[in-house]
Image (cartoon, rainbow, N blue to C red; front, side, top):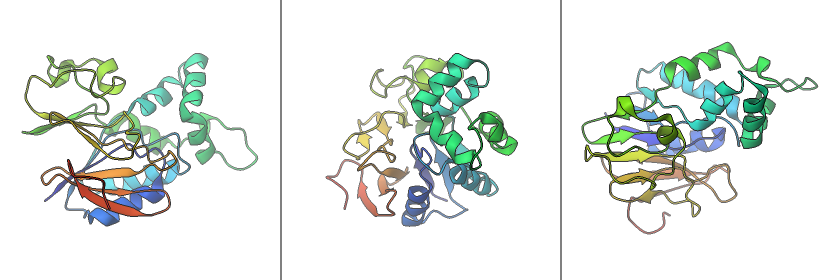
Length: 229
């Protein structure tokens, strides 16, 4: 069984299908997703439905992202709701709102709320790696990490984690569309929703990665090597 990890999807379902196909991921493989499934892109509903279907394999480990946290908070007060809208929430509402109806969270299905609130994890740890959405406080174990660090800090704001394990994260878009490999940390957010952006999928053991964009184009490379082709 291989272990794959996919960076921030942001409602880009076309790229998601293309990168899964390019990496030849099967239901027998472990798939870790780093959060930020919603906002920015046009196909949020299809992305969440795909994740729910893939979850039935028993091999999906979905993490929370800061955009899911913003959407959850937006249910509580108007200020949080407006902040979420300004960060891409309108794209999510648009994906769920029937034509000629007012955009609002009432259209978001309960099954999708349950996935975000009950099934998504704050982090995931193996013998060699720690998977988080944004970053890690270097001196704290996973069960004592601050929410600000896990979901909002940039990946290089902190030194390596005291465990010596490699951190794999998203959240910090790599403007050239290439995943960043710092040795102690790997960042897989390659801005799929941006012009010229890509969605990245990494084979954790081999270091090979595949990328796809919203046009369905794909390419691959090895971490640390020159530009993919």
